Length: 116
Image 1: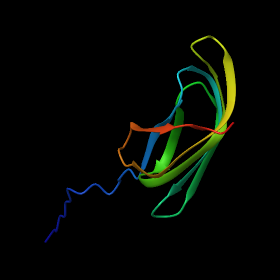
Image 2: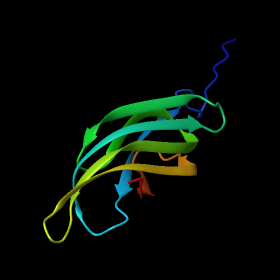
Image 3: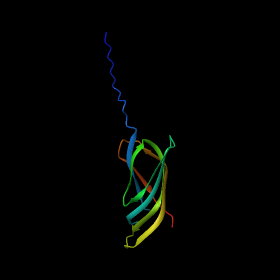
Image 4: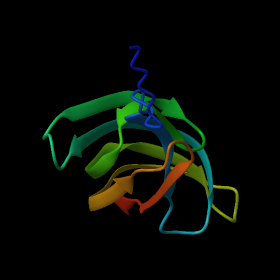
């Protein structure tokens, strides 16, 4: 007698995701560069992901576990105001709860708090 078992369940689930963090200026202006340091803590596992770099747009986050995160960003932003004057300020941005649960395309917007 032969016994055959079949399952409709896929054992290979994708536990990881990617996304982007968009930093929003609190004043009118065009961002030229952002030098940043990001700390993301998974609220379930307490694992911390850190990123650092330089960009003129959104910060890409790749290969993180899907779930809820707290996010802290520190850095320096250089931007040009409506009059064409260039400004550079230290900034912070943070959120206590952000869901990064979609398989791809997670988008988070955080408003910068200019420090000086």
